[in-house]
Image (tube, rainbow, N blue to C red; front, side, top):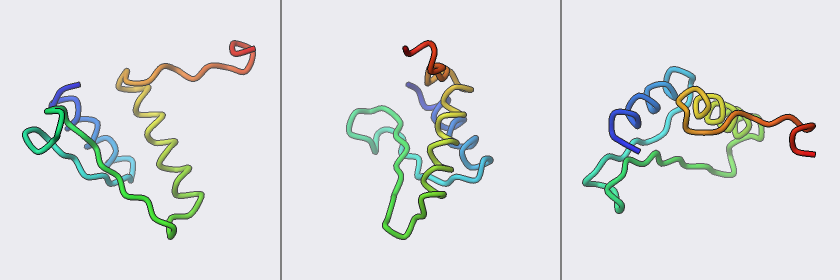
Length: 75
């Protein structure tokens, strides 16, 4: 939602071993910070799973994603 949080999240991604490009306003179409990723056919399933796990974990840590629900809570 803001530049300070985007930079902190981006740095946490780097610390976790995941690199993405950080784009900050005015270089973004909506004037909001963006993280841009590139995925190719050369990425393995393990690499994609790693990236998704890092995003999910840090998203929860930064309050950007709700905590995971258990299967019992969904049923």
